Length: 146
Ligand code: CA2
Image 1 (cartoon, protein in one colour):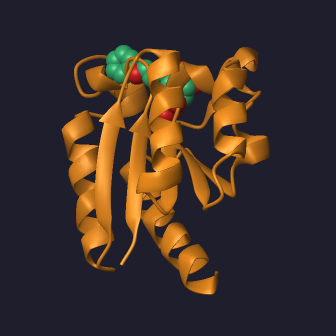
Image 2 (image 1 turned 90 degrees about the horizontal axis):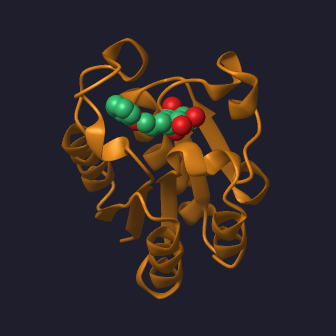
């Protein structure tokens, strides 16, 4: 079936180790496993990648142009200012779902802007792990309709 690129940005490798009141106690590996399990229900494969380096994420998005059918991305703090991710995602032709564990719109004002949202098919915020499962459903529906 389809290949989904699951991309995580800076500091998300620390999930479960700090700030559990905001991000919960699950580790990044738990999020990746949940996406793999949700994707497997639809016969999809997941390629997971995390980096705290903007250029490495740009390269991963470029790789997805040939190696993946859809992208699920939590760009971390890059969400709010990394126009290079905006441009790279704009060059990806498949569905792009932006996911945030917390709801940035309910936090500090500087988190209220996403430079990724304008080039995302859709954004899911504030639903924790469930948001990632919904992202897999969204990708599945979008790919089936295309
Ligand atoms: O809610 C989200 O998923 C965010 O993308 C998380 C980013 C934040 O900058 C965005 O505004 C919203 C921060 C990720 C930092 O993750 C940590 C996890 C554990 C300990 C420290 C940082």
